[in-house]
Image (cartoon, rainbow, N blue to C red; front, side, top):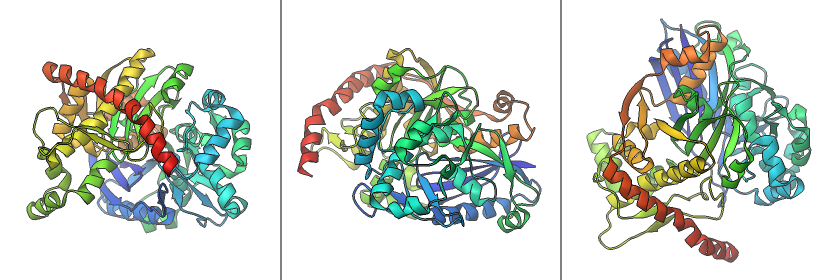
Length: 503
């Protein structure tokens, strides 16, 4: 018997099968392209995503003859949604989180309800990333989509629906739509009215870890499942990853290093001062708990951009040696603090400033700069951004004393040392980098009686591979640099405004 976690990310999907102890039995992944039809537009083709998920399911199931899957659950990127007809036909591509075409509709919602009221209801600082303002863009630019749409489904409920069960969405993912009341744990009629969406056009909200159905036999056979498979509600990828990292109590935080970067901390509940720093606060994938979320939409996409645009030599070296190109890219840097500062705002700023007009900036360039210096600036800049979030959390009384890193970036020991030195905190790394898949597999096991509780599941399956501790001299240097980094956005803000006016 095995438990399966499906993670549908922004640029790729992964399917992982685990045994009851958390050991990986089989895994598969596929990378799909982001569609960029116009500047500021970033979409996914839902049918292509589904096809890639199916390919991963068949590949994993083909390796599980002695350990058939008994239950599965899902995690996914937040906000992106798919409009479907009653017959299940996709009506449009899915605008992802960083798609910013809906700025006017975002401003409309904020003017109608007010940022404080929206935060009181949803725990989300108003922004263009959320689902409802994206639907409003369709209202204004493609009204036929709203007229024909039977459901608007985020990727956890879209994939579950394609697996043959009812459209159901967990509370953590529902919160990312900007239509969910995080105190009442139900859709908000006030927000739905402002967003122009009917309650029946959204999936049924349920707690994470709820059995919602069983994959029909014919479809299960087609996907390679050997027996009956229950489908269980999962979570938004960030709290799901926090669950898979064992972040279940105050003082602990998860640092997710994937296509986007995110910092997830456990909190007691919603506090209005979080709005001052644009921090999200909403239900954890572990029912009964809340998390705060700070992030940067640029994240690991920045290393992918470097790979595609600047790393011809590194790609050639990786091809010749058979090594992973990202290992080649990162291993060229020296073990010393960098001389450049980079603002990783390639799709707008991070959480703290919430400025969609902000752009990336590289400060300190001279003729002595080399490609390796740019790589180090990328790794440090993404970390400085999260270290600023940690500073602000501490200011409002949310203390963090330990980080657990997950995601593809956590495999790099050099980057983990940088993370520890800059944040000044111990950074632990899991045996598996697929914590979101592990977290929802834990939910699948809990829902079907494999584990008596999520705490028991965490004790059985979560194992640390290594812990990096901050080096005092490096940390002191980085804290000085962090203060300079924290001033960069304010210094460049007039430039961003002027550039936006020119556009």
